[in-house]
Length: 270
Image 1 (cartoon, rainbow, N blue to C red):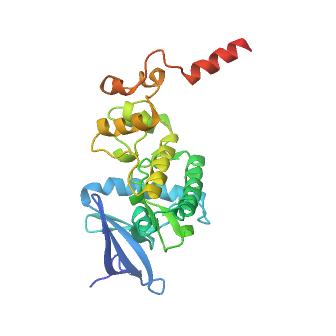
Image 2: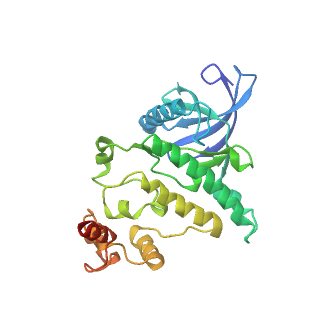
Image 3: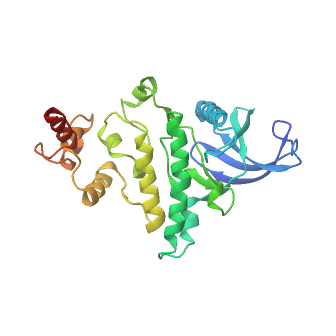
């Protein structure tokens, strides 16, 4: 078989998704060391170029690789397909790894370790003013069975947290996988870096319990689970959302106490 980009020797397919195929390959320029190559389906080439540029900037800001974000080695084209070369990753999703752990109190320390590394990763993204916008167990992979090797992957949907980019989503608010989507996105409110933290909370609960925290097939069923657990969404915030009329029954009454109002009244007194 011919070398890919005159350099990489195909070994195996290690994963497939809606937008790409992941393969394992040997880098003949580096003593046949193993790498992962993401081969984009041709209709998703623009996503690949966007992801590569985002990773280039993130890697430049973290040259020693302390942030748990994916390292991009290089990129090339194969016929009409955009390809990105990464460090070799274990294709096993994080929640699949946890499925093999006992369902008792011994699982909690492992969840805490994952929380620590993911918070470090999100802290780094926050300093770079970047929203991952699709944080979920499938996008958290391991290089080996040590949690220190954890990597956040798939930055194809990442958003620079500036108005010019955020406003592109104010039409349909289609970001984040539905099971891990923040309430402000559900309601069609302006959003920011915090939406990744909501996804993180959902992920950690899922790792501990073994099932999604807010499972549902659509916004209605997921919002029902949220309100059952957390109570009504704050009316004074949600009423500003683009989709408030569709989800109004999930918010509290107009007389519901609002923390923002309480702070404002306190400031007036002082």
